[in-house]
Length: 324
Image (cartoon, rainbow, N blue to C red):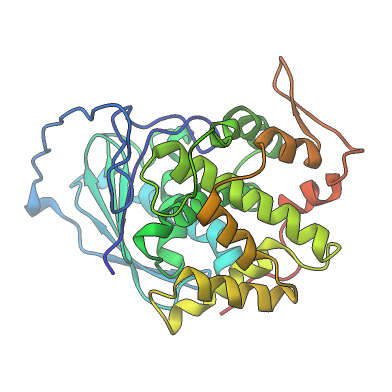
């Protein structure tokens, strides 16, 4: 199945917005501000560099630089390596070749199956840390089996939730800043009256932020039900490894095999409820359970919170890294 993940306007949880008009999401168009029009840049095809092959952290990536700007080739390669390093802890890499195509553009990215296209403004790749999240987010999409259109919220929510945590674990992002941004931005995923189930949603805040709330709730629920013996990381590793046998695994089957890895029937029922009825929990309450409390100056991390230990583990490299 052809699946397209487009750049979207997000605030600081996963980076400052790239372009305010980016509201075309997944295989659909989300409800949001009308997109601006941009002149398609003219590429000097004669200046394209030969593809590079990068193999590390379980990934085999073909990097195609169509920008014609050799000054930043090293920065682009370094960006790809940072993304592979961060994402591989939970995915173990990918069983198939992933192509990363860099083109001049106004900012943003798309993922079609195993092909990631980066639309880069002029300058270093990325030009600053506010765009650093883009490639890891897209690589998460390329590392898991595709789901049906009705479950796009699971995929976008997972990439939104997981990307900053993985970059913290890889030493690429400061943990305190990440929690501050999460406390500021996750409330966008609060349930709203009359929204109903998430299945087939096309609404921006539901695809990304309510999807992220779902995965945070799953993280907490797994920790409680298994008394810390298993984590969301363990479940996601099993799902990522399934890509070698089934491109479109299907959400029901994906959650079934994740529950088998956890040894508890946890995630399938959680998915069914959210799909049919929507998000049940307030983001602020979930964050408070972790000891993440928003303050005037940023965030306070409470050591005596019920799930304070889990909060520490969420930003620490797992003792069970995902390996193919």
